[in-house]
Amino acid sequence: MPDARLANARWPDVKAALERGRPVVAILPCGATEAHGPHLPLGTDVIISEGVAAFALPKLEERDIQAFVLPSLAYAPAEYAAGFSGTISISMDSALAVLLDIARSLKKQGFAMLALVNSHFDPANVAVLRDAAETIVRDIGMKVAFPDFTRRKLAEQLTEEFKSGACHAGQFEGSLVLASRPELVDEDARLRLPPNANSLVAAFAKGAKTFEEAGGPQAYFGAPAAASADEGIASLDRMSDLVVQAIVAQLEP
Image (cartoon, rainbow, N blue to C red; front, top):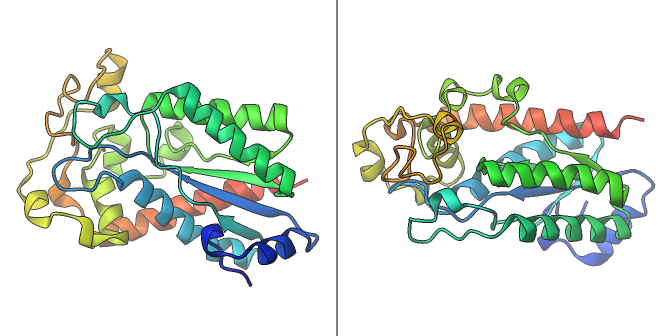
């Protein structure tokens, strides 16, 4: 079997997989380069999406579904965090154009489906991904699996902090990074941070345009000190289940 990470695979192996006569899925981890408190790395969303994709791979193999994980998309609309150093935000138009070009290239090669695994929940980015999913199906003729964790049906299956809306660089995301890349977490800073119960969802609904306006002067919401690797592993397992379910549902005739 070729390496399931597309960037590590060799082109003849990918070609052989595409010619094997069964659908091949391309999984695209989506995130951002964005401030996540003083304790988590700027690439937190990408790390989480990559972790979910990695957990999904063996579950897909158990179902005899061939999948490759694409190089991650690390740039996205991220204006809410634009006031913090290191954040890189791109326009919605640019993000959509990249997603559509990726899908066209995959479709041309013979990939059966694009699965979007997203952990960057900025409303603008979620809107782009929803638009991309619809456009790819309608205009490119390619199947798309997009388990949108911001939808109530899926959000209710995640942690209490996630459901509260106070979940940027807090217990939920901190746990996921501790499970995947603990060496990138500033533990001293994390354990000193007090909880921030301000809900991003509520703040966005009231018109907040920045993390500062939403009540997050250090670019975090939730309870960073409560994060744990065990919780992160449980979340990775659950989120990957939802990704696999979405892929299987779209592959069904």
